Image (cartoon, rainbow, N blue to C red; front, side, top):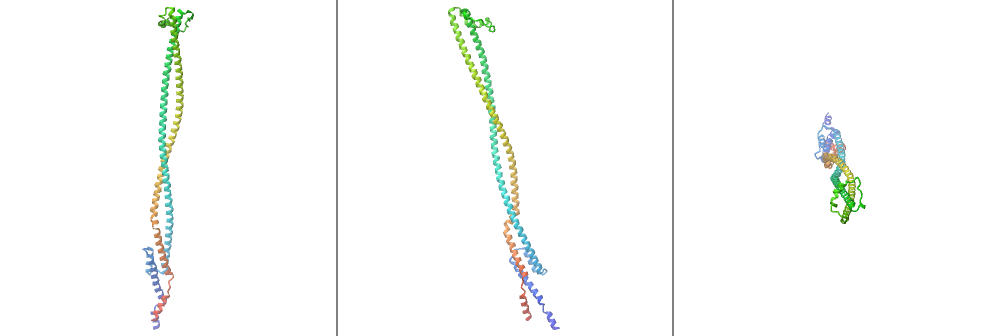
Length: 350
């Protein structure tokens, strides 16, 4: 009975081994966790589980496996997010550069079109003014030609009347002094009474045969001078008419060329104005695209800057946690209990 009582008072070998090993293992695992601890919530949870006695080694190991898997997944997400951020930021920055180049190009085209429009407007105004001045010059030349022609017609009529008067006076003198040279007046001419009355000043002093030849010679001189003047007037009229016709022809050609050029300039002006409207619409759309791209860039930086800036630190922290968890797991999974048995034998030998 005493022997059985002694055996019962000595702790079981297996129980002593498990109790001591569990404590030592938990302490070793906690020490491993402390090496990688930098305020990690994950390590705190594992440490809390190791310090407690409710969760067994297998449960703690399971927690460690779950946390390691979570850390690997988080790092994988960060890797993917960093790659995404880098690609998207590069893409949007390239797009912003392209849009800026496009904006500058559109602005340059707008400036060119505005300059061209001003040039076309000035050319259209000049052509309209030249056409007006040309029409005014032609109108003035036409009025002048009409006046010159009317003066020629009036003067020709007067000269013709004077010439006929001189012819009549000479013929009248010949009737008295040179009957052989006398010519009967034609029916359509003025009556003899009218002719006599008009020529009275030429013949009132011609009463003798002696002075008749001098008067007739004077009449011939006057008649010849008058014919010469009439011929000169005729030549001047013809030259004036030819000059007017040439001026009118040249003006018509110039007006036709100016009108054609005006139509071309007005067409070019309309095209430039239409293109300018299109360019302004394009500029507005491109500016909108630029603003949208800048907003996208801002959103990406808001989403990515923290991750990119802290990526290495976050990765290092996870690596440290994983290393600590891996060590703790190794301690829990590969503990050596032989030292406990030696301690037990020493206790029993006492």
